[in-house]
Length: 114
Image (tube, rainbow, N blue to C red; front, side, top):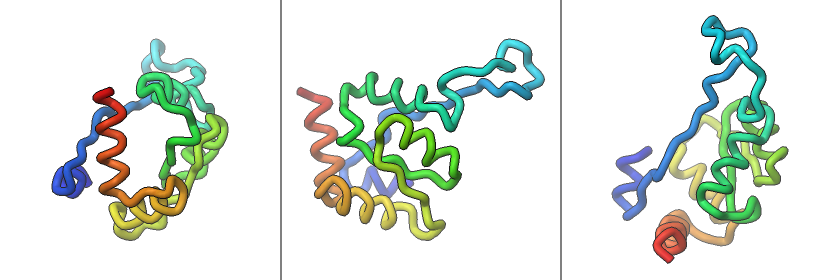
């Protein structure tokens, strides 16, 4: 997806993971944390990092835990249908934020610069 985003002038600014799981083999990560889906911690961290409210964000995931984590953070959450991810994302952004994908990328870029 990154080359397609770049082709319309956008970029991926970050990605985020939660390495913790209670069943993990490494003791330092085998702990329960708020960042582990379906809890909202990771989404809340990203909202804080980018200084945006949940009403300005959509979350797209393929698992029920993705959607539950987004909903717990107050973010509009949508299950990816397995088809063209860029087209799906464009539809979700347009329908829920009132922007097309290019406008969304431009608005996000401008907001981060100001």
